[in-house]
Image (cartoon, rainbow, N blue to C red; front, side, top):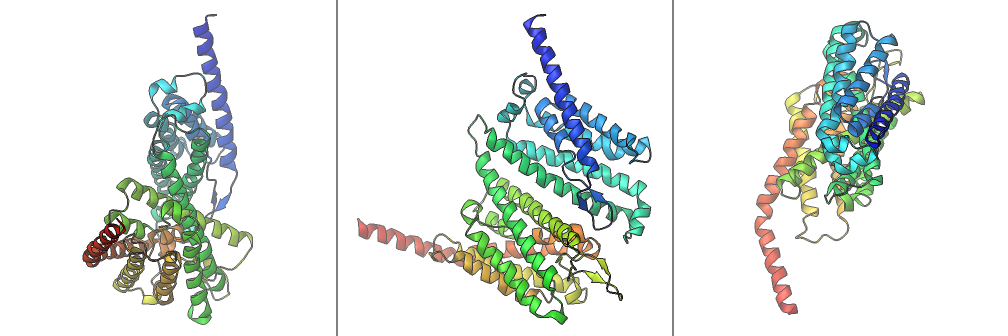
Length: 457
C-alpha cells in the first residue's frame, strides 16, 4: 500500500471512529434530562455539541452524515411520532449544525489528516460561534414548526393559548442553554489551541466571557433574592432587599470584571456606549449576545435549584390552596401599573435614562471621579429599583428581563417586548443627552489639561 493511500485510509478511520464517539456521546446526552421546563417536560442542553464540534473539525459532508444518523436514532428510540416529524424536528436542524464547519474553516484545513483539533487554529472562533448561532436558529425554527404541528395538546395542557407560544418558549429555553454551553467549550478550545495568526479574538472572548459572568450573577443573585424574600405589598421588606441585591451585584462586578469588559452587563448600557463612540458595532453585538446568554443561564439555574430544593418562588403565582400555578423567577410584569402598557414604557424609559446617565457621567474619562465609580453605579441601580419595583419589578436591562421571561413563560413572555424596547430607548436617550450637555465641559477639560502640561514644561 502506498504512503498516499495509507494516509487516506488513516484519515477515513480517524473520521469514522471520531464520528462514532461523537454520535454515541450526542445520543447519550439526548437521553439525560437535565433541565425541567416551565411548561412541563425536560430538555438536555449540549446534546448536539458533539455534532457541532465534529462538523467544525471534519467539514460539512461528514457533519451532515453524523447529524442524519443521529436523527434516525431519535426516530428508532421511539421519541418521535412519524418519519415526517424526524425530518422536521431533527434532520433539518442537525444538518444545519453539521454544516457549521463549511463557513468556519478553509477546505484545505478540513482535508488534512493530522490534528483535527488544530483545524481550530486556522479559523476565527468568533466566526465559528457566529455561524453556529445561525445553525441553531435553523434548528430551533424546525423544532418550533414540529411543536406547532405535533404538540398542540401539550400546549393546552400546559396552560398556553397557542402551540406556537408553547413551542417558542420550550425550544428557546434549550436553545439558549445549548449556546451558553457551546460558548464555554469553544472558549476552552481556543485558549488551549490559540490561533496561529494575529487577531483580537482572545481579547474579545475575554470581554464577552466577563459580560456573560456578570449578567449571570446579576440575574442569579438579584432575581434569586426576589424569589426568596418576595416583592409584594404584603412583604415590603422585600423591596429594599431586592434593590440592594441588584445594586450590590453591580458593585461587586464593577470591581471584578470592570477592568476586562467595563462591566456593562446590560444591553441598554452597551447601546449607550456604542452611541457615545466608546465601543464598536461588533463588540456591541457580542456583548448583547453573551449578556442575554448569561441572564438566561442564571434564570434557568434558579428554576432548577428552587425546584430541586422544593423552595417556594415568592414571585410566582399561587392558587387558593397555596399551590404554585406558575413560576415568577423575578420576571418583570405589568401588575404594578394595572396592565397599563404606556405607564410601563414611561417608567422603564425614565428609570433607564437616569441609571445610564449616571453611568456615563461617572465613567467619563475626561472627568476624574476617583475609584468610586462602581459604588456610585451600584447605588444608582438601588435607587431606581426602590421606585421601580412597585411598578414593573424594575428592568432597566433587557437581558435581565429576557432570562427570567424565557423560563417563566405566560404574561412575562408576552409582555417582554416592553422591557426590551423601553430600556434600550432610555439608554439611547441618555447617551444623546449626555453627549449634548457635556460637550462644552469636555472642551474646557481638554484646555485645562493642556494648560497643566504647558506649566510643567
